[in-house]
Amino acid sequence: MKLTEKYSVDRVPADARQPFFGIALVHMGMLTALDQFMLGAVLGHAMSYSDAFIAITVGSCIFFMATAGLGYAGMREGVSGSLLARWSGFGNNGSMLVGLVIAVSLLGWFGVQNSVFANALDYASGHKLGFQTAAALSGLTLTLIVAFGFKALRLLAKIAVPTFAIGIIYSVTTLINGHNSGVVIAAPSAANPLFLSDAITMVVGGSIVASLITPDLTRYYRNGRQVTLMTLLTILVGEYMVNGAAIVLAIMFNTADIVIIMSQAIGGVGLVVVVLSTMRINDINLYSSSLGIANAIQAFSGRRLPYVIITVTIGVLGTTLSIMGILDRFVDLLNLLGILFPPIISVMLVDYFILKTDRAVLDDSRALNRLPLDSQTRKTGWKAIVASLVGALTGYYFTMGIPAINAIIAASVAYLMLERFRSPCR
Image (cartoon, rainbow, N blue to C red; front, side, top):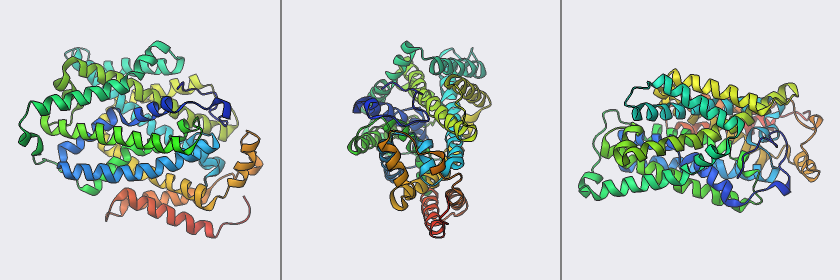
């Protein structure tokens, strides 16, 4: 699949839809990447096997519902996630906020991934290069690759998905075969254990941004079966294989540092895999972040800012975050995303599939292969915004149960109640 900004604020027409595998590979790349491996390493370093896999399973169920639902809507309407929000409760200005939230979160992910890239480069140089220099070089180089489309390097980055998977399978198989089974099964007690509820929210936080930007990819699909199969494959490979392997390796090496894990597991090849994987996922981060910013600018001013300018700006900001040490706040970032994004997604799903407030307008405009007119689009979906805030605050302050699920339930109930009293004006 060739990612393109051509339909950043338009519907993808029927004749531009793509085959299944290319899109599925890109989507799997979101979760067969270092952020998921990092998450698994954190879980393995702080939990037992059973609790870690319970957290993965519950988090995967939430991910499936969110991803399959939004993915189907994106496929049906042929629009990106941030654009879909305009006609899923949030309105024109509300979708601008959603686009900005997506862009800011992906900016954070870019910084985290680039930090890992920089650590690998610094490690390979024997720490002669220095982290900050390595972070600046890797971040700016990748930004130029995505912005100006150096095809050879982007093709090399796409190799990262299967290479990363093969490297993980090889590492786990080799290490398990070389150890007594009792050593592998017996997980050491963690110095800083995680509560199961917090771990589930972290799992959700590690994947939920992928749910919200799934329509960016599924808008190129032709039917719902493709969306469902893609989601299941992503969960199987990303959540269970990548996370599961990281849990085992983190326990065996007694560390959550993935650069150390990969370099000790498969040597220099491990560092190459780290670099390629970072290139692949940050390619997606910059692409979807640019779509979100493009939607926000278009919604606010009616102008279409060039894709290259948006991408370079985001890349520079993300590189700056990595230099400033965002990797040290990785767990905090996961917890924040785990309570911030689920309410937004739940409001969108409730509006699109249950209330269907804009479905007639979408159906009419889809038949004409265009977006609904401004006069047919609500200006600001205040109730959706308020319900999302209620959900996020509930997830943050209500400590009983699982924060991510609390946020989803609170936002859904709040939105349904608020919409009961909606006025007939748009």
